[in-house]
Length: 116
Image (cartoon, rainbow, N blue to C red):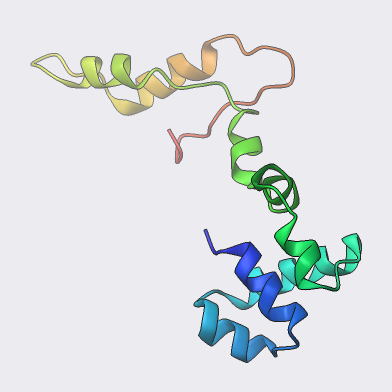
């Protein structure tokens, strides 16, 4: 994960996207997101950025993939591995069908075969 505080600091100093990309070693997307946070939160000085806690930075730059993983029914990887080892291996399609037949809770979804 890029150093968001450093990216915002460089943007507040007036550096261009290209300069920030070279100095911070980050993607254009990360710079754009940091710039959006600066605009939305109305940060304009380096002092304001220094006062930010790690928790606040995490809130601004939360990782959506962590949230998405909680929407899926967990796969029992150990059980799948155990069923695939030995002489009587079950086909992965059979194990996936069993997984899809298990009960989900509430709004959780199942992984498709490609992700299984």
